[in-house]
Length: 83
Image (cartoon, rainbow, N blue to C red; front, side, top):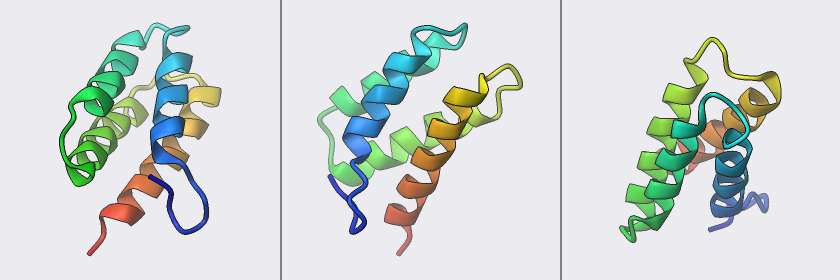
């Protein structure tokens, strides 16, 4: 799904999950993949992605290149989930 500014949540989440494979935080990549593959409603997928991305951002040892991508994804997901 794309937001009005062209942000592709699904693609960005997959890219973040792949980036995480190269870090000690690989379990978050698995969680993000699970959210995407859950086959639920888009809103449910976004809520799952936002929750796991938020948990990732709480990690002190999250590499900056991962943190930047996660932060943008979290903000985009959060804006899409606002009423």
